Length: 314
Image (cartoon, rainbow, N blue to C red):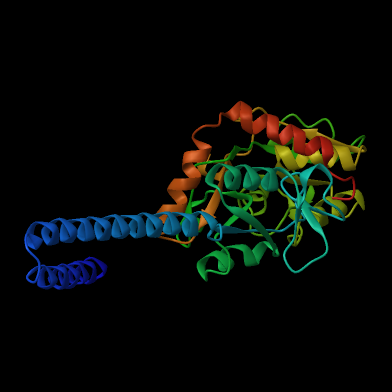
């Protein structure tokens, strides 16, 4: 539209000048030259305007709001995630709260957002609300120490693993089961673990004659049950176990080597992933592009750092 208006203006001006030249000798050459100059000036103005529009569009895009990645977690599952009163060590504010979240999951979420150029928002939810929050679109993803199980894959998609966990057993030092060398040695124990986890659903039933108590609502509740002597042992993953030893020095962590003497689990049970709404391949591929640059050693180093700074209360 702008180019047509410019050409019309040029033609009108040229026409006026040409009409004036009919009353003056030799005016035809001058009119042509003037018309060409007028059109050239119009071209230059149009070009400048187009350039300005392009720059303005680029500036608008550059100054546009960054994407915000809404990430759900319990903020109560150290060393994966926990709640703290301030932003020490790089903790992130929890949405609709005056508290902050930190831990391995927050560290990973920050790295992903830094790499992708996103802002980060942490949403605190209880364990059983995490997957529904993804499926309903309340959050973009869950980074909360979730195993990539076939059952969960029916409801959500997962990224590649962002941690590889092994199964451990926690007991109290000096207790009846403190010297256990295999799952068989745990026979008859009173035990529990966190609800909706492979620890509770898959591992505890493998203990012969076990007295399996009701599942706890959270990992901290599980650890408090053991500390309060409500059970003989709890089953969890290695990072949670390592974190527990910091908070509860009277605990002992048992590892059975991953062979026939250990709990029998599949790789999907111990591979920890980030869950997303089914079909959100754009975000899945973006996050995987970040994770693909990291190694198992990178994951382990980050986890060790999280364990080293976790509050004792978590």
